[in-house]
Image 1 (cartoon, rainbow, N blue to C red):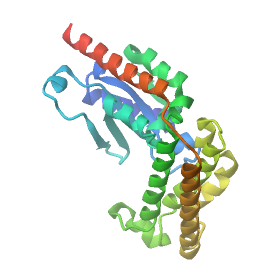
Image 2: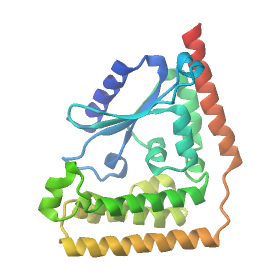
Image 3: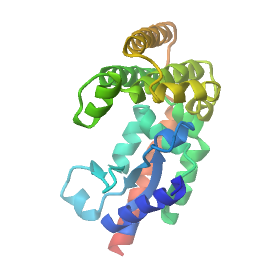
Image 4: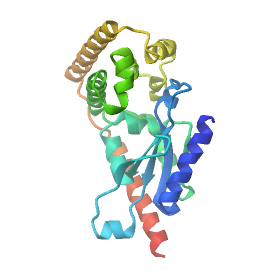
Length: 263
């Protein structure tokens, strides 16, 4: 079954769980967006939801949770207000869905999504300072996960002594940051074309435990140095025009959903 067919199954699950009007869109996340998927890669998605009238009136906590499908693939559900905040924080996991080839957008909100797409490069650099800090945080996460005995990773750790998937992510972030600071388009940063074969080899576990640990330590140090230097030598500031766009999309989409629900 190809990625598109598996993505459609995710969409069906989302529509089984929520009314159509409350679904802003469904988007693929992960390795397929970087051209780094293989035959073992899961299909994971993010579903952006709109709050109902009742949720707003009763001041209920915005939806944010992960649904695990029967085949262990994930659907991350996120209220659109939280999604917009993730864009403001320059969270790469949420920025990347602006660039995915696999998505469904509710026709009710398609023009609003198109506004985000029109300015997706500006959104991806809305606040470079936050973007770099987010990438540095992701680096620490991947470095920690390299040998952490998560229950789902015990078999992998027993085989390699480390998790090759986390090592390849660590290197991918390193290449990403270099391209990002060089001013490449975000879409080009997401797909490390020159390094795809090398990253796939890392993901397959070609390195010994000592080699992997040494590479991870060196890469982490390089990323920290690159980010620190960029933050110290530049006066980055948020883009106020993108702030306005964020507010418009969140406000208008929620307004349309409430009108539909009430009338």
